[in-house]
Image 1 (cartoon, rainbow, N blue to C red):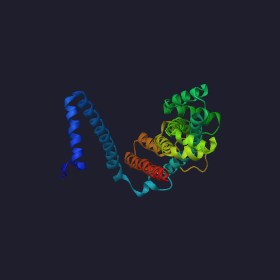
Image 2: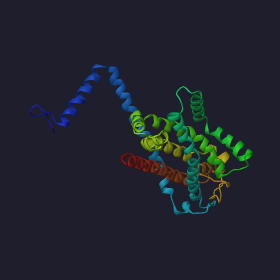
Image 3: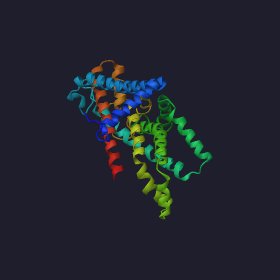
Length: 298
C-alpha cells in the first residue's frame, strides 16, 4: 500500500485522503450523505434493472434458438424470423433516408441561419416538441388514414417508413440542434476570419465537430424504429415475407413478436426473436460508438 513519504504523497494515498475528507463532510452534513446515498442507490437500481432485463431475455430466448427460425421463407411450422429481420433493416434504412436529411438540415437552419427571436423558429420548435409527445398509436392512425388510404399506398413498406420518419423527425432535429449549439463559437469566428463563407463553415467546420451528437440522435431514432410496433401494424401491415417493392406489406421484428404473442402458440419462438432484437440494438450502439470515436480522433 502506497503511503506519504518525504513530504510527498503518492496517488493512492491522495485518493484515500480525498475519500476520507468526503466521507467526513457527509457525516457532518446528514442531508449531503442522504443525497449521496440516494444517488448511489439509483445508479445501482438502474444497472440492476438492465442486468435483470437482459439476463431474463437471454435465459428465456437462447435455448429456443434453432436453424429453422432463420429459414428464408416463413410458414406456420418454422415461424421464421428471417423475413422480419430483413424487413427491419429495410425499414430502418428507408425511414432514416427520409427523416435524417430533413431533421439535420432543419437543425442547421435553426442554429446557423435563423435570427434569434424569429417567430418561425419558435413555431418550428413548438411543432417539434408537440410531435415528440404524440403517442405512437396516433402516428399509426395517421399513417393508416393518410398514407394507406388517402395516398393509396396501402399497407406497405413505404407507408410504414413515412410514418416512422415523421415520428423520429423531432428526435433527430432536436439532438442535432443541441450538437450544433455545443460547437464553440470560436470555430465559427476562426473560419469567418480566414475568409470562409457560411456554407463552407457549416459543412467543413461545424458539422464534423457535431457528428458525435448527431450520431447519438440517429442511434436513438434507430432504437425507436426497431422497437416500434403499434404504428407499423396500422401502416406497414403484418405480412411475413420479404417485400418485392416498397409498396408491399412488411412485418418487422417487433411486429413479428407481437403477432406470435397474440397467437399464443409460439411463445418460445417469440423469446428467441427477442434475443435477436436485443443483439441488434446492442450491436448498433457498439458500432456507432466506434464510428463516433474514429470521427472525433480523425
